[in-house]
Image (cartoon, rainbow, N blue to C red; front, side, top):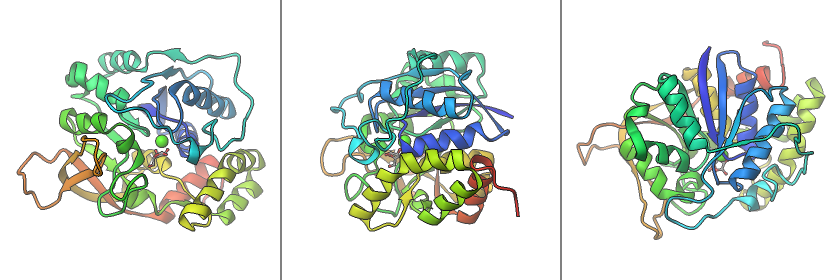
Length: 312
Ligand code: BDR
Ligand code: CA
């Protein structure tokens, strides 16, 4: 199995992504780092511990990271994820294990000791950008770098053109595309919007695994309401698990290679991902832009791993 670091901002869909990773034997999660995003980094770390407790994996270390973006003021997504980041479920806090400080130092140390680790980023890219700005060569040998963020042809979710993780810290997102020495697998809204946790899927999870179904129902109820109110979607889009799923089974996603950058200026285009699909700029192709998703294969993986469904 492959060693992975998950950098995240849990977050409802981050929590589901963590569960998928923890329940997949192909992945060995060696550390979880949190960044300010959906919620401030210390709340994200508390939520990561709640997920680890549920999965009985409190042996995995959790580190808090950046508590503000590189340059712009911090805007959380507590309107979408709840003030507690888990849909205002107010689950009991884990008190016997605590998050440690300095996610950036943890990532640096791990990459120097275990240079072929896989890094999955599910939140704003502040921590990752800080590591790259200090020593980009640390990422030279990583097996893969995957991020959930950005959008190619699909519209944004924070503005007409920008996705939240890029919008929240546009300078970090740009720095990651500028500095990452390996191709970035970009799992953006084009593909994640197709992953909708519907009420019937939730009922199915509850029927086959009441404990897990109950947890997912508690954290997604608020998210369901938000999706209905603002997007007239029945159920909720879960973005982040797809970026974990593609590490387990790369065939779930397909796309193309291109040069990508991010608009860092704080104007109407803030956080927009710019994919040079016509090679106007003749720059090295630094990204793999995901555009197609096998939705059935994703759910088969998620339901067997997280809910314990048996393969048909
Ligand atoms: C991304 O932003 C966050 O709200 C989600 O956790 C996901 O990582 C989607 O735009
Ligand atoms: Ca996230």
